[in-house]
Amino acid sequence: MNNLDYLIEELIKEDPNLSNIEIPTNIDDKKDLYRALRNIRNPKPISEDYLKIQDEYLKEEINNKGIIDEKNIAFDKDIISIWQGDITTLKCDVIVNACNEYLLGCFNPTHRCIDNTIHSFAGMQLREECNNIMKGKTLPNGEVVLTNAYNLPSKYIIQTVGPQVDGIPSEKDKDDLRKCYYNSLELCKDKGLKTIAFPCIATGLYGFPKDEASKIAISTVKEYLKVIPNTFNHIIFNVYKDEDLEIYKKNI
Image (cartoon, rainbow, N blue to C red; front, side, top):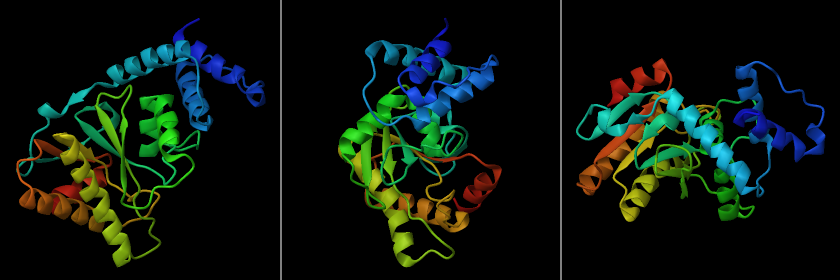
């Protein structure tokens, strides 16, 4: 039995409600099933043997995607870069996760949001750690929590919650988004972490207008660097879609 089959079968065995699931033969379908099974699993302990094999599998998957060292990303403005790619392949001190208020990741088995992706490739230890930190509480908008990155090439993950916007952002929405960036930078400064990558926080399902969100992100970082210089070596704005790339290029 290969690692992927073992991981799938163990997750099916631990939940009687999954006993009727048929394991596909196609490798891509198997990978999708495994990701779905992880996404729907509530935080709880699992055996060290399982985690060892999970870690081997995830590290191989990330290596196959191709790890990107932040040192190889060109600067666009001073120490700031705009980089288009998969944030789970980025090797730096910290990546930021635009998470929900529970910090437990996305439980939608087929979703491809950043929260889902980061949890899926970090491993189930991340959900367990977040659960132990939050203990059923919720994280207010703009606040931050530092966690391990587990199988990701980054050292740490900062979890932060952006504002949910319906239509035009209020002043509070804007302030909450600024806090996501400012508090992340402050946390890195306090921990001595020198390189950080931000996604486009709150611009997906949370509905913050992309152009305005990018202006807030860029201005917050630039103002921080003016007030507190020589703290960071590299700050990266990670974009995934072509539309976001053009917006950030325009506003940098």
